[in-house]
Every structure is written in structure tokens, then in C-alpha cells.
Image (spheres, rainbow, N blue to C red):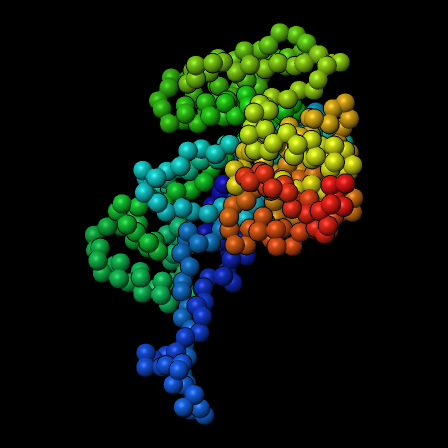
Amino acid sequence: DDRGGIHTIYFHGSQSEILKKSNWSPAFDGYNRNTSQQHQGFPIAALKRNIPNGFADLPFVAKVLDRFPQKNYRGMPFPEEELPLFCYAGGSLLIRDNLRNQPLPKPYGFVVKNERGDSIYVSCLSFLEPLTKRREMQLDKISFIRRDVSLPHRRHCKNKLDQIHHQTANLFHLVAFDDVVSFETKTICLVGRYPYWTEFRRFLAHLQLLSQNSSDIPLERHISHLLFSVPIPKPGGQAILVPLSTMNDPMALVMPPLKDLPLVDLSFNRLFAALDVPTVVTIVLGFLALEKKVILMSRRQSLVLDCCELLKSLLFPFDLCAPYVPHLTQAFMSCLDFPGAIFVGIYDDEQENGLARIVRANIPEDSIIVELDSGEIHCDGNRYDHVV
């Protein structure tokens, strides 16, 4: 993610949301709704408070910071524009929390298409890191600008200056608690032609662990070794083993024979732990095989992709001809209105204006929603017509 530039917050369209507005309320405490009928005709003053948003309330623009290698492979363009739309669907948010409450890294993935229709598989690992001094200086510059447009923020800066006379850093942040740390979300992605979801997740977790420890070998050496030295497995050949110093087992890359089952680098235990066998059979034979609109939802982001990939593999020897988006975001929400079949997965972030809540409130026409957390199936119209 990127928060470079002092005007980033305005570029994201958040300038109009600089203030939250509370509900209308009486301007004095003596107002009583039960006795208000006795004073009909008298004017009643009401007020509406403007609550200033903090830096942790507004999304920042996200973009690709770095990539390796710098040149694209032949026939495989780098999805530079698509990565921020999938990794940071609503923009990048700052998080204020205790350092001890820092969550574990979160793996997920998605699939994009190139101009020829070939699938490009992107494995991601998202994690939180405390703000660096460079980021804090960028926020200070934005804070100076906000003093001219926000009276509460100007008052906060003045009080902060009165409290701290000799310190020159971290003076103008909206909130500052000694036991609270500001985190920024970062994501490392591994883009490839083959769906090695499990092994690529392990490699990304390996890189994240190495970044937190001192090592004589730089991270770039591990990345270049995987991309330039490790060969692609031959169909039906021996497995390619890549040692991982932070893990007990090496990364194993295997390619099935050409006339065998397709490559599925995921465990079916996750699918059958979320859905029972009759439900899986109904989804594969009753929905996907008959080309219906199927939407998978879950509060666990990695589970959405895993179930989409596993259900898609169960169609073998047939292939899915419908549009396939295992990680749908609001930027691509319009594909739900496409006529015909579609197979998508939606991560439920439990936000009031999140995509999952919007889709549940207005189920697209002729679509089936599968809740992976509860195993329930919801659909538009008569459920019997969809199942039968």
C-alpha cells in the first residue's frame, strides 16, 4: 500500500467525508417529548454536531510499491492495476491498537485473466506493521493542511502544542496514546501461472517470518532463487522441493500427468468441513453444471477462495464456462448483473456498507447464495425452482 504524497487522502475522494454528522438533538436538557404537546407553536432549538474524522477513519489510496522481476514474462502481463482493487477494495486504512493485539498474517488469493483469457493466480499475505517515521512525517504534513479546514483539529493541535513544548515529532496526530500503536496494512503477492495455493502461501509466510528476524541472506535472494533457479515441474515427473529455513517441511511443487486429474493444491477437508456432502453435490451438479449464478460467502477470506477452487475442480472432466471471480470486490460488483451464469466468492468483512451485506439485502436475480459459515443456501424467488 502507499500513502506517499501529502494530498493522498483527497485523491481518494474522502474530502467530502471529512466530518461525520450526528443526528438532530434538542439544544437544551429541559426538553421533554411528553410535555412538548403543551407548548405547540413555540420554537424549539435543535443542534447537529460535526464530529471530525481521524486518519484511521478515512481510506488512503493503495498502489504497488515494488515488484520483482521488473520486466513482464512473455504472455503474462503484470496485473499492476488489478492488485490494489483486489487487495484493498475500499482503500487502505490505518489501525490503532495495542501492539500486543497485532493479529496474525492473513492469507488469501484471487484469479485474474489476461487478454487471451488465460488465468493468472495471485497468492497474497496481508499483515500489519507499525508506522515508520517516514509515514508519520507524511501524516504530519496532512495534519498541517487539515488545520485550515477543521476547527476541532486546529483546537487539538493547539492543545497538543501547549502540552509538549520541546518535542518536535508526532505533535499533530489526531490521537496519541502511549500504549496504542498505529498500524498500516501491507500485502505481499506471488503471481504465477499455476494454482499452487498452499505452497505459495507457505513461501509468503516464510518471507514474512524472515523479515522479522535478522539473517545473513537478504529477502531478495530467496525471491530470486524461487523465480530464477527453481524449475517448473514436468507433468507426471518428480516433485520439486524448495527448502524453507523457517519451516520444518520444504515447499513441494508437483504437476499431475497430462491425462490425469487437474492440479488441485488444496485439501478437500476445508470444503467438507464447511458444507456437507448433499450440499456439495447440489452445488456442483444442480447449480454449476446447469450454469446458474452461484455466490459463495464467508467471514474467513481464505475459505472463500479454497471452496471456489475445490468446487470448480469437481466439475472435471468438464470445465467452467461462466465468468469466475473467486474474490469479488465492489470495484467489479457490476458483474453480478451479467445475464447468464456466474461463479463468484465474496469475503464478508462485516461492515455496514460492505459488499456482502449489500448483496444479501438485494439478492441478484436468479442467483444462489451459499453461506460457508452456516452451510445455508439462499436464493432469489422460489428455492425449489433453483434446486430442481
